[in-house]
Length: 229
Length: 229
DNA sequence: ACCTGAACACCGTTCAAGT
DNA sequence: ACCTGAACACCGTTCAAGT
Image (cartoon, rainbow over all chains, first blue to last red; front, top):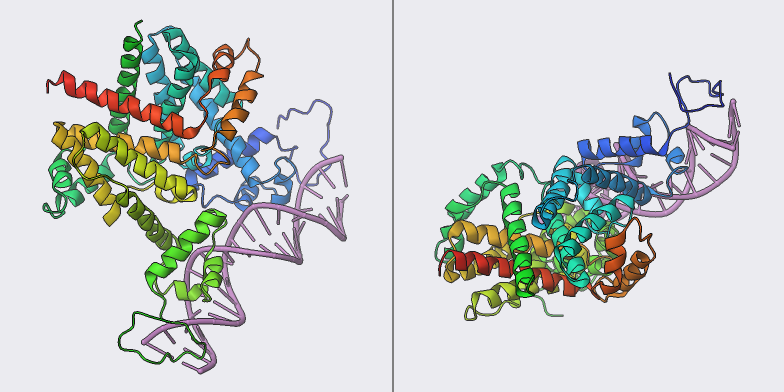
C-alpha cells in the first residue's frame, strides 16, 4: 500500500490502510458522488461514509459544505482547460472551442452547473479559461472592454444552456421529441406560432447550443467589421 | 374581513379570521419569503408559521415542496407577461423587450432563478412568453426551426445572466469594481490579456447582458439578410 | 371534513471525549 | 495531534389523533 508519506513508517491507527486523507481525494470522491446522485442528494454524511471516515473529519479540510463544493467546482473547471486547443487557430475557432469545452465538460458533470453557475470563477482554472478567451479576443483586434463583455456573454450563454443539462434526456433529444408532441397538441387559436414551430423543433440541446453560439460569434464578427479591421 | 365565500356564513374554527387558505395566497407568501431569505433558507416550516398554519396543511394544496416552488415560478413568469409590449414594433425591438422583461423580472426575484432555470417553462405563462417570441420571429420571416432555436438561445442566454443576479451587488456594479481591482493585481506574465482588460471591465451585469443580447440579435439579422428578405 | 402536533428519517455543524 | 460518536438545531414528509 503505497502512500506519499516519506517520514512516517507505522500508522498509529489500529485499523490498517488509513493514511491521512488528502484534499484532492476528498474532492474526487465528492465529484463522483455528485455525478452519481445529484447535487441535492449529495450529503457530507454520504461522503464521509464513502471515505470510511466521519463528517467531522471533513471539517478538518474544508470550512463547510459550500467550501468543499467550491473545491469540486474548481476541479471540474480543470477539465475544461485540458480541452482547449493551443492559440494558433482563427479567433472564431478558438472562442467556439472554448465554449464547447465548457459545455462538454458540464455534459459530463451536469449536476455541477448549479454549484458553479452563480459564481464568477475566480480559482486558478477559471482564470485560465478567462485568460484564454480574452487573449483570443484581444489578438483578434477587439478593444479590451468589448473583449471582456464578449467573454461574459459567451460564458453566461453557455452556462444558461448547461443549467438544463441536469434534466432527463436533455442531451439525447428524447425530451425534445416529447416537447414537440406536447406543443403540437396545443390550441392553434391561442398558440399559433408555437403550434406552427412544433414540428420543426431541434432534436437536442446541443444543436440549439451550437446554433446560438454561432449567432453570438457572427454578431461579434459584424462588430469587428464595422470597426474596420 | 371580506372573504370570497358566498355560502359559508360562520367559520367553524374557534380562532377568528381563518378562512380556507387559497392556493394563490400560499404562493404569494412563499414568493415573499424566497425573495426575502433566499431559496436555500426558505422552508415549509417557515412558510407555515408565516401563514399561521402548519406544514401538514401545505401538503393539502401541494404534493411536495418542489410542486409548491413550481407554482411560485409560474407566478413569477406571470410578471414577465405584463411587461411585454403589444405586437406592433419591429421584430428586433420585440425580442429585445421580451428578453429585457425576463431579465428585469428576475432582477426583482433573483432567488427564483435557481428554481426556474433548469426547467423548460411549460405552465400557462411560460407558454405565453414562448408564443410571443415565436410569433415575432415567424412574422419577421424566420423559418420555424430557426425561430425555435432562436427562442431557446435568447431565453437560455438570459437565464445564464440571471443566474448571477443572486450574488451580492451584481446588478449595481459594486462587485464589478471589486473584480476590476482583483484582476488588475494578477501577475501580468501569466494573465496578460486579463490584466490588460481589467481597467475596462463593464460596470455592471445589466450592461453586459444588453451587450450580448445585441450580439445575438445582430447575428439573427445577419441570418435573415443572407436568406434574402 | 379538515387541520394539527408529534413523530420519522434525514440534514449541516460542533465539540467533548477518546486514542 | 488527530479523529470520532453523539449531540444540537434544523430539514421534508407523514399520520394518528383531535375538533
